[in-house]
Image (cartoon, rainbow, N blue to C red; front, side, top):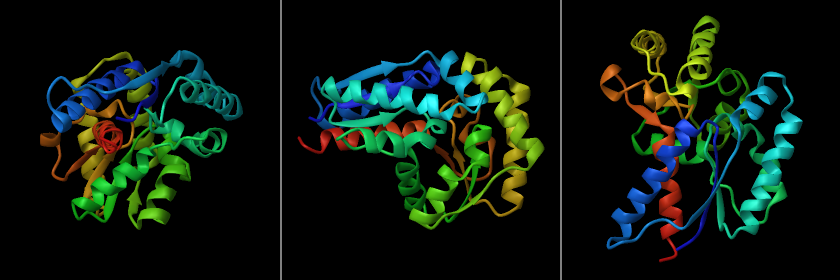
Length: 232
């Protein structure tokens, strides 16, 4: 079995499901008492969040590159970055280490294509929705059409992620607001919705909306388990 290097803590609320889902999937695949071989480095998200909102991405890159190197030295065979937003820095990480990075957008695109969906709405932090590192990869590498919410809706989504979900708070009014945002994207042609922040599955459920939801946390974690068990 390959050893997974998890880079988490962004936030810890969404890193916990990674550990659980990966181990559940390894057990399902291999049976018996099998569980995942992994090493985890969990950051202090307060430091990372300040870098994000101060546009100090160079410092965030230095941090994640250093931690990725530590995971490689600790015996990881590949890396899993347990966050969508910080995949903005995926190229920096890939250049700095000698082991593969399992990119969350690639795993998500495979799941979307597997459902026959070609047009998707993207929910996430303002960075993920407004910058091109994520949607651009989905378009250019996987041929998907990606829609994002309007400006005021993007602000709502971003605020809920950082002020509620990252603190483990699930608010019914916020769920209602997210459903309305999704419905507006469906009206524009979205055939499915990417939960492009690993905390959003805490809030939005499949039964809440009329199109498929693509839970990036579950998709990414299952892809990691599949890759880890492939050598068995």
